[in-house]
Length: 158
Image (cartoon, rainbow, N blue to C red; front, side, top):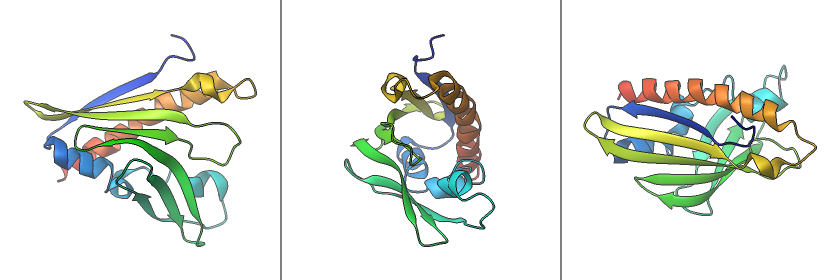
């Protein structure tokens, strides 16, 4: 598998596509593992800064932002494609480093069991020579597993 190949992860939840889409987007702060994957954790470790909420602006050109207890509002992504309840595409950059964003696409497909949620994280080649692309990709490949598990657990509780 190439270090540049997209990461693909899927999970099926027992929700209708519209409800699954809303949970993934509008309610992201209710299930996202903020204790592991947030700018508060990666940039303010040991400083007592907490995530107060995650904002997901529901439109193309909107932003996904992390609101912190110290008053800062830090971006995670720009919404490139907004097609509820079937698809959202994000220019993903939840950090301050001077590299371009990668791209995360999430599709929601109705099935007999509910909704299949397919996530593809791509665009690794954009990161450039000064980034350890293989390490970044490995980290996300692992991280998306637990993140989608948390999403599935939240969906099961609805």
